[in-house]
Image 1 (cartoon, rainbow, N blue to C red):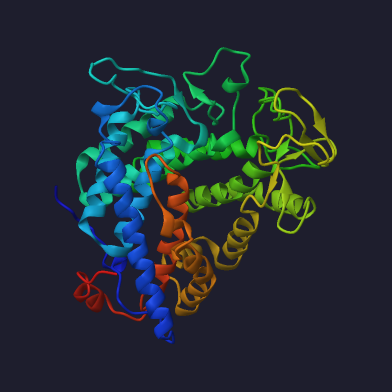
Image 2 (image 1 turned 90 degrees about the vertical axis):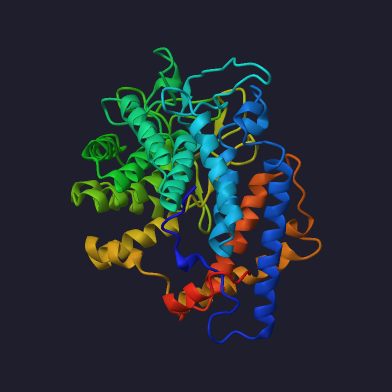
Length: 444
């Protein structure tokens, strides 16, 4: 396997941002060692036992649920970026290869992987599911493998998924929960934003367009952008619903998902519409944003907190009291606890990006987002990350105690993400590319 395009900016240097002392240097080294140790344990337990060997797969095993392999991929990618150790890239490519084979023949991903019965050649094709960004997570892993290796099979796999995504797009511009769609009358066949449906499919098309520049993918993105314009709810809740009836009114989902204006997808739509504008240059895609931001400003349920559901006719927060029955209330006294009914939904971050776009304009924002963080920004990241890093790598911390055996790989991914953020920021930001190249073989 050949490797190309390896960024020297991903190399760890045994030095820190200017102005940090010896205790910071010690923490830096300890964090690097802890990250390597935890990821090596994961590889020794899961990779060595064939968790990404498609020949070992058995239908409906939790380890082979299609949301799980990209979590492994993210862990190995982060380890590779901060250590530059080839073994982590090799593990990462195993995950990418697995995701190529585990997709459904049509090009998308079902909830269970496309598996072979252990000891036989029987396969289990399933309908594809767009819930929880399964396809987007897989495509991002696969495209990174293409970027890092230059191997055509990765690009071809991503293109196949993007082509399937176009095939599954409704004429209105949105996507259903599953494809082929459920029978007419099922809420799973409705135009949907629940669990990132439509948002993640649009991002699949954007990701593949960025690499291929094939205009058909941009046309699909534009079609989705127009859907957000056309299906934005009216005042007093000018956001978007989790799922829609065909008359553009909010629809019921599960018993705890009432017809409503929904905080989570409404926030995520802000960021997506900005990206559609950056890709197309068409300002019409920014049209829905000011009203959404104004609605968020007047709809807080706490500091940096919003309800998931708002009654469309009044704008009041509403809450689900039951998993099994349609019991919707205006207060939190009795709640169905198995569902996040309020949160930040990343709104403040999306609003900040919107404000930056207003300040810099399209070309300015594109340029600014391509510039590495400043020294001051790096120092702020280090300071913000340090307490969590110290806790994670302590003997009682998660990394210090991590064992796998089918353990909480998602928690490991979060922990590795914290170490990754700290270690990348802690590199000496003034180092030239020549210095980085010279230090390329130095371990963390």
